Image (cartoon, rainbow over all chains, first blue to last red; front, side, top):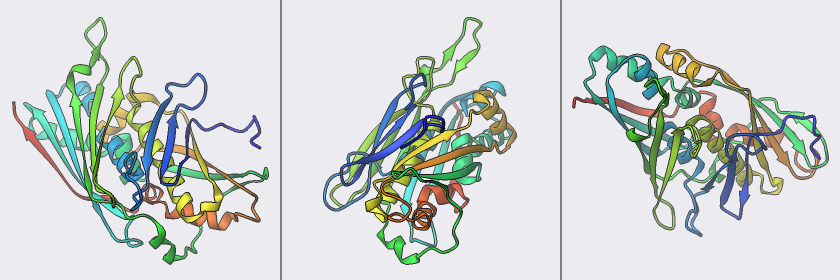
Length: 63
Length: 262
């Protein structure tokens, strides 16, 4: 249980199935956003829904 | 870079940037490296080129990935209600690195959308505009492509680059914890201290000055410290590739800046 007095994250990430992740920027009410990004872990079972997190980092750098 | 050029009255007309992403061996490296190529278009002198190269190297995202500007504080919040701050550990089982997914080869291309610049009524630039980013990478099933928009605009339709980068870091952390500690059911969040704004970031970039940011990374973990010990979580956090890059492990293999006079 997270107590209300603790700082709440403004960027959040969690798993989305076996090989993918959903990340939200501006997760709290009143913040700019929210923007959601899907990324995936490279694997041999299924196509990737989004780029790997390493590629997302480089994409942010390119921007 | 657009903001620095505007403040410095450098006639920068357009920018394109390419990154080649190459897989590398772990644990000697973070698992990948990039070759960076920037093309600047405009009637730009050699001294102006140097200033823009410095701005590119000291942009907030570049600083985070290459200059250790992010000061990380890790906190674990277990489902049981226990909370702990994670110390750096010197004991990491090197064989665990083989469990992390290999980074596929590929490329990232950024194209500045010059028409998205915004000016106020006095003709001063208020927002630098947006960048279209194309990502192409291989996978073990087939290669894939994606596109993103990021940048600075008044409507806030697109995420700014720095939060975008930290979103990638949280995704990387979650992926690493899922892979190494699948029973942890980790969720990862960031609490970022307010920054000085774009003006300060651009001032730092223009001056080649590192602007440190304190970020608390909060990891939600199933169970309790008995079922998911802090030592194992701490080791996994340290093995995360973007975390390692933020701590100065190195990511740039090569970089070149080219000017195209137009």
